[in-house]
Image (cartoon, rainbow, N blue to C red; front, top):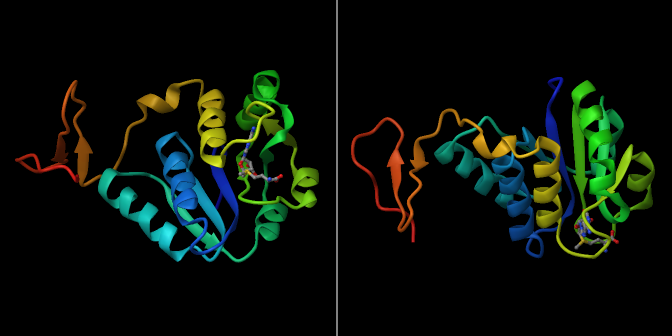
Length: 187
Ligand SMILES: C[S@@+](CC[C@H](N)C(=O)[O-])C[C@H]1O[C@@H](n2cnc3c(N)ncnc32)[C@H](O)[C@@H]1O
């Protein structure tokens, strides 16, 4: 089900072993920076379970799903489709159009892994570049979401967390959300 202003990240072509950490980081970045859901195309049980573990511990709402192929997700999408690619139009030139599209409908944000099939370029309403230089889907996604939400994602409220980080000038502090004592942070 899609909500009117949902932002869903579609991660293409996950391959077990090779892309495990990048796929996990795409999901964690999507969650941390304001998206509602990540859909991973490929065999991604391990990244999906790592992302779900973070949602259980540090909160949501955020959903994770795994599909065999990206094609059906894009075809069934009822809203605007953004594809992040170094070959697209510069984000600072198209951000206002993308924000307008997101005001009107849910947004699907597609990120690749290796070679992205050309049908994705054609299916996208906006092919968006975060510079015209090659880098990473995690970096591209982070800059894109920040431009989309114009920084508001940094103040987001989290629900149903068991733990929260208490910001410190120095050191690390993690507390149970409804508990008494702080706990030792993971090393
Ligand atoms: C390591 S790149 C590989 C891209 C692949 N060589 C191709 O031509 O489709 C993986 C993903 O990172 C994202 N990406 C890399 N550089 C980008 C950029 N400058 N702007 C936006 N997204 C970028 C894209 O989503 C891309 O599919």
